[in-house]
Every structure is written in structure tokens, then in C-alpha cells.
Length: 386
Image (cartoon, rainbow, N blue to C red; front, side, top):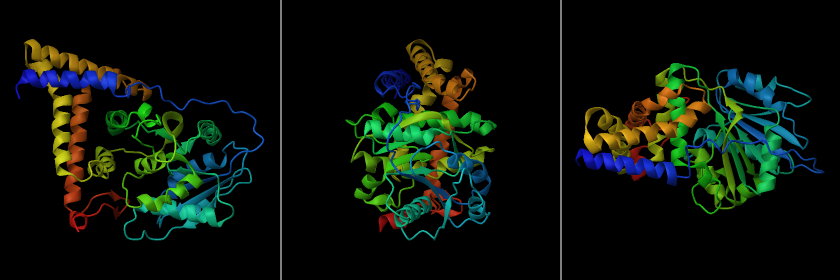
């Protein structure tokens, strides 16, 4: 492929991304506060928090959950997923406004289950055994701090839209050098892969969710086979969204009313988070991996190289593509309050993510795929061939 063809392809791709990819780059699917009408009855809700070695985070996040301004029946379950740091003790010591969480001591995941999904399933079982099944289940990660009206607002949204799943993408921490460099792009790439406007369109099959905060209709989830239907999924939130969208509308949006405390102080920590599931997103396919690496090189890396080191039409194509790339990335940088000049660095950031993806594949090939908090959760190549 000559440089003119490369430049033209990159230009066409960026035009398509900007105008025909659900406008993924526009920050318009924020979780807007719907009105909070007075209702005679409110659905019952159980919040389930899977927690493995999360004592420090729970000390801040559980009080916010317990203080939810929700007028209906609301209870909280913390699943202590075999923690060694006192997670269960911290949860048992929490009370707020006559509310206190119930704590479930989690068991080891059975074969074929990922740890988080098994913890969530144990929470569901306890919720069902404790009385009448709730109308909704709110799955919340242990590191997520919710503002006091979030539960009431997501319930109103689910009721008004008839949605079977409402998911909020929490605003991630963006303080360390690694986070400032990589976090906005992480959400940018996720939205490119799963345009929220298409996720929220019942006519389209594309489905996604953010696992940090997901409100699910309990009866619909039961009819879909509960979490056993996706027990081995590493990308459990998107797998749950795909399962639920087969049975009704779903909704996903950005928000500043849910904040993640999860810190990635070093680049290696951020890399480990991405590598845990990057190759799983490609369905462990070497062909898809090769395609993605070539595509990222052509779409993200070629434009600045052409802009800086070529001339004529290839240079013009490179400048135009690089400019569109920066324009697309700028809204996410504003959302995370980062300098807009970072938009020009997206080719380097994208290259970093390409390396993470290759690293994820290497982990999988070596039998260490899906590492999370001391567990190797992805099937080995031999297991997948069996």
C-alpha cells in the first residue's frame, strides 16, 4: 500500500467515524436528572456490591449507598468475595439512617465462573431467599461513590422508559500521570466501539453497559437465565447488556453523579486493568488481533506520520485526518478536565493501547489470561480447543 492510499483510507475512516458512528464522540448521553415525581408506590430494590479486598474503598462508598434518598423498599447486600483485608468486617460495621448492609461470605467460584459474576450470583441468591424477590437489582462496584439521588433517578428512568437495564458509566479517577494520559482515551475507545446512541436504540442489536452501576429488572434477568447464562464472561457488563437487550430496551450514559475511587497510580497498574480483558474482547482470535493492530496503525498512527514527513496529497490527507482525530477526542478531554493539547497526542496514546492489547494476547497464550486480584479467569488455549 502506498502512502497516498494509506492517507486516503485514514481520511475516509475518520469522516465515517465523525458522521456515521452514532456521534460517539459527542458528550450528549450524560445521565440527566429526570424529574422526581411523587409516586404512590415505588419498586423494591436490592443493591448488591461484590467486593474482594475492598476494605479501604468500602469505608467511603458504602455510606453513600446507605444514604440513598429512595422512598421505596431498599436494602443492601455486600458479597465478601474471600477477602483477606477485613472487607467483611468493614461492611458489617456500616450503618446509616437505620440502614445497615447484610454481608454474604462468598464461596470459591465453581468451574467455569468468573469471580465477580459468581459473587454477584451469590448476592442474587441471598436477595431471593430473604423474602419476596425485589423488583430491581442495583449492581454496584465496591469503588463507586453514588450521589444521594442516583438510585431514585435510575429507577424513574427505568420505569418511564420501560428499560430492563439502566447503566451509568462512572467518571473514572484522573489524577496520576498514568490516569491523565490513559483514562479519557479508555472511555473514548469504549464509546467508539459501543456508540451510546446505538446502545440506547432498541432497533439496534449493539449492547453495552458499565459494570460500576447497573440497575436490572429482577424478573427479566430471571427469565433470561440469571447470571449463569454468562457465567464465564470476562467482560461481564457488556455480556449482561447483550443478554438483557434481547428482552427489552436498555440505556447507558456517562455521568458525574457516580465517581470511581479506583486508583491507577502507575502505568503498569493501568496496563494490567486493560490487559485483563482486551484479548477477550477480540474473542481470543489471532486474526482479529492482527486486524486491530493494522487498523489502529493505519487510522491513528499513519495520519501524523503523513502530516509531518510527507508532502502533497498524502500530507494533506494526514493533516485532515489528524485534525478530525483531535476534534473527536476533545469533548472527552473536556469532560475529564484535561488540556485539549492532549488531543494531538491521541496517536501515541492509541499506540500504547495497541501494546496493551498485544500484552493481553501474550498473557492468554501463556495461560495467564484474565488476571484479577490473584485469579486467572480466562480459559487457557488448551481449554478452548477442548
